[in-house]
Length: 121
Length: 108
Image 1 (cartoon, rainbow over the protein chains, first blue to last red):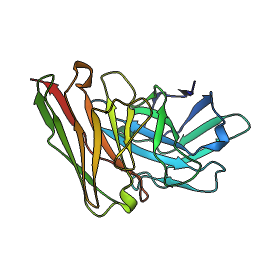
Image 2: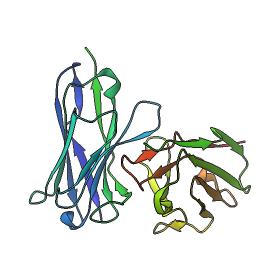
Image 3: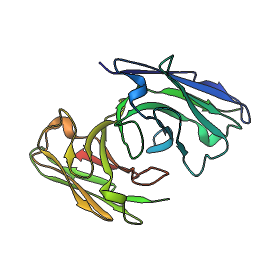
């Protein structure tokens, strides 16, 4: 069974940084691309970032470029998202999702339950 | 960036009726790379449809997707009580990938 468990969320002040992690199990991690998708309270889904199986390619939402960095450690079956210069509008539930194949184009297939990031002073 | 506009915002229907949800893209989606997701309150999204018209594993055949270019549709035949939820379309044909704002299907 595919399992994705996000962690690292919490309350953080504006301007600070945070690193999210996603521990994957139940599948061969380096056979798939991975994604981060977020959802602000009461709002819709927003794709944040994606990374190919071997970290050779990555992409970001236009509004986030330069502040967030996605990475993965295939030896640890873990996906990361480093978020710098956090803003109040970054407050959201952050989902980790497994892609459909190794590289783009691919779509999120399996989703974790999310980790909540709250940016507030 | 491709902007996806979903309509209507809310669809009020009764169990047994057909739901037709629209997703319109601001420019043509490469190779019709459109997916549809269902989300219920307090739950993670669930993949329903990929490549515009292919059903994901385990999805009932009352769910179907169609469309090409800039216009895509999710149809739910004979609504079941468990189908009342929010539905999102997503394009993954070009980066950045983008989602529509969602359509809520509620019980009339």
